[in-house]
Length: 113
Image 1 (cartoon, rainbow, N blue to C red):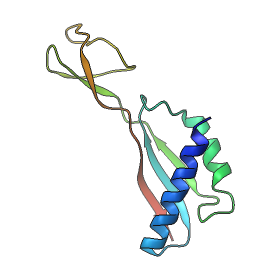
Image 2: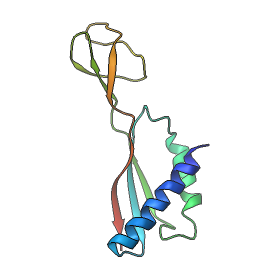
Image 3: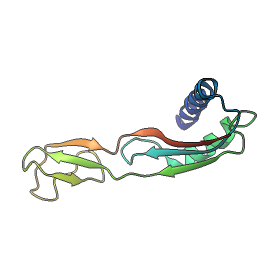
């Protein structure tokens, strides 16, 4: 379960930001988890609760946003929604799609004190 190591990385980011921005408590962490990121949201939630225990983010709420995945079709040059890697273009059936979004795992917003 690599989500635990991802949560440890999130905690390190929170610690760095707390030192830089002078806050002592994190109440809410909002993250974007793209559907192509290979991150399981339920496992991320579980890992977050475990890893944040005893830290400045203990008891913080994790909000997970799932932005849609999109790709540029290199055949018809349209941006199209995709569900999985290697989907075909829903517009022209082309097989050459370049993913432009949906792979992200990033902190969108923090609520801190």
